[in-house]
Image (tube, rainbow, N blue to C red; front, top):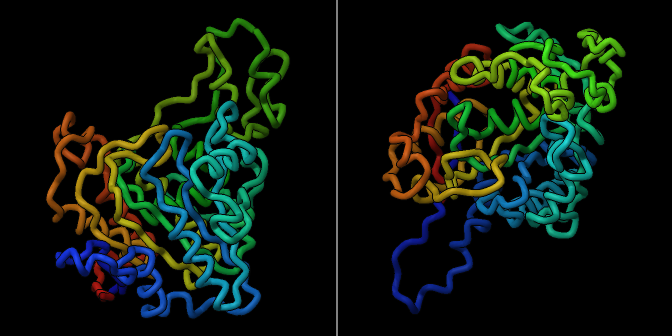
Length: 368
């Protein structure tokens, strides 16, 4: 049974004369929880510690607060660790999120800098998202996972995840922050799409796909060499003639399972004992921070959960979400249910346990 530490972020009702209470800050409570739990005690002097976060996109306003990242960095340094704050490139080639330069621009716009976080910011999979270490998983969908190199090279990984909804996978917590956020572009492609790109009869031979391909996998006769193809989605993005066939965009149980298999690859590469997972169940929006806006939260803030077990911490957050009283006025009111009918949050948790990366059963250890 996994142990999940929890601290509430809601302030108690008091008289106005007692409202100046620094100890009630969510950042202070986060610090107390980490110190009480001992979750950072395995960090040794000189350890390279990856602090994995999601920068959001330009226009996102309910992302994880930089103040929490700063506090985690400070606590890691007290243990003698050498922390760096990290994220990976997004799928594709054309957008800011798709390369390291754009990712760093977005990070700065949203308040994540070396100064605010007190640690260097490193894009873990390189300039274009192709710097990785391969890890075999032999899963139902994935034979191997492309683990972002800076994650693979780290001694410890601290996942700081903004727990929220996810339009494809149902929920985005520690499993998503690891299984999508710690992998390089080729595995991101394999999570989202059912087959390598193929050029169809719609092709007008404009040559844009040839020019953009980073691996020169597209020949002069407009055929894709599947062995050389890195599966970056660049050709699909640049084609204006709908001539690139990438198959179906994956949803439901299948995408949940693919994300979990990638999380397993990352955990196996670094070592399960070298992870700490912290989920911030705050500003719980119905969609991921990879959208260029932030909707109304679906429930009031719940609290902060932390564990060494990736499945337990997400299970605890999801159970708390289901028990919470809803807030009217978000996108899911239009759909009718937070659990979108095409997504599969439960499958993430079930499959994670099946693959042995964690346990669904947990006990809560509350830190007041």
